[in-house]
Image 1 (cartoon, helix red, strand yellow):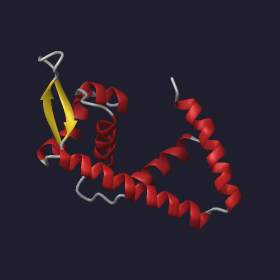
Image 2: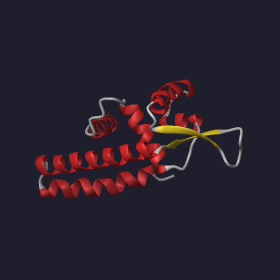
Image 3: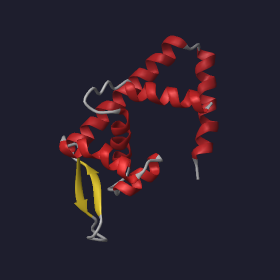
Length: 131
């Protein structure tokens, strides 16, 4: 199951066809869109990466203007990563492309009964992701 979910995740992320950023960077942008400012350490922990690896992943996003650093309003010593307007647009466009790809795949390759089965399975998988 883990292998299949991993392959599906890569295919869905790849559906946005972002030639200028990696799948890891797409994942970072998506996480930042869902959270209001996080540290590199927080991102690294959520992605299961080392801090140094996440710093290398984030650097091109900063350089391209998709992400920026801001001082934490509650602790001025901490720097938070936030999406820029360009980064937010990128996330919205990517989500739309991925949603269209997945809907197309389900329509093209699955029967109505299989689509219902996928929806039922998603309910169970969603329950597994809750803390």
